[in-house]
Figure (cartoon, rainbow, N blue to C red):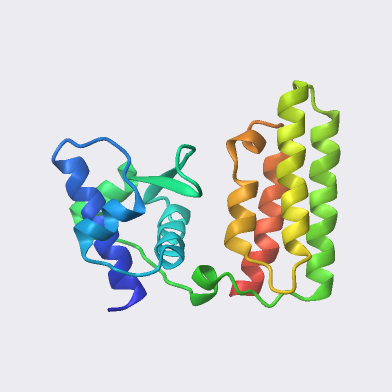
Length: 185
């Protein structure tokens, strides 16, 4: 099996769930059990990250499970499967998290994260929300400093709902994504 066929299997399973009226989100173990895909969770998460990036599935954090995420097909994903036109592109860098960023690109990303920090500190947020948002930025900053940063994890942190509501963050995040995606292409 290829990564593309594995993604299609996941998407078709989520399509079947919703088509049968099951609107609940499901977990990786549920997807594995019902698709026959018995791969590492990290691989499955990478596949679903690609599907989420394409707008075909939506994920939610499952707080009761350590590191758990919940999945559901989006309307766009449902229509794509229904019409047989699933636009899936698999990039090994995206699911391994290995991008070869130059020191200049990393420095630019650090600068953007510092700008995000300034935006958060100057925003009119509650103390708790400010602390949570700054913790996410700090975590991303620490991950970038690792010898081989896992970009999917960094992007997952930065896509947090805690940050998405802060005015001014979206534009900075888009700039950061453009730097990483330029390296991936």
